[in-house]
Length: 70
Image 1 (cartoon, rainbow, N blue to C red):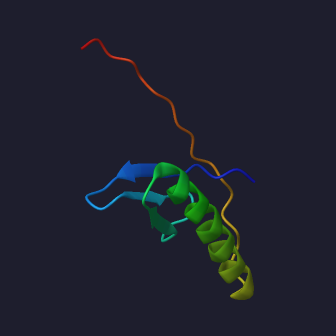
Image 2 (image 1 turned 180 degrees about the horizontal axis):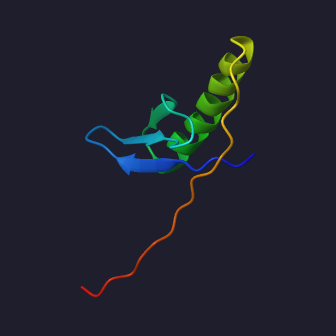
Image 3 (image 1 turned 45 degrees about the horizontal axis):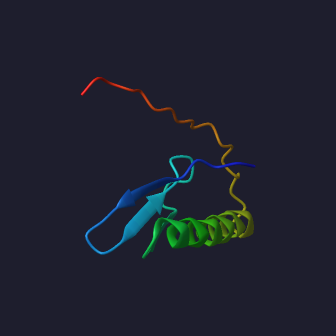
């Protein structure tokens, strides 16, 4: 499955979350590190959901950019 992640600049580096996995977040010093950390966080999150007997959310979020004149 492919989950959308949002990576945002923070005061101390970067943070990330997935709209389809509430509560699944991660941080890092660079966007690349944050993405890798988020991969690990998603795997851990899904494993925890399975262990607790919860349904794994299907990825439904999508993204697009809208270009605007400056």
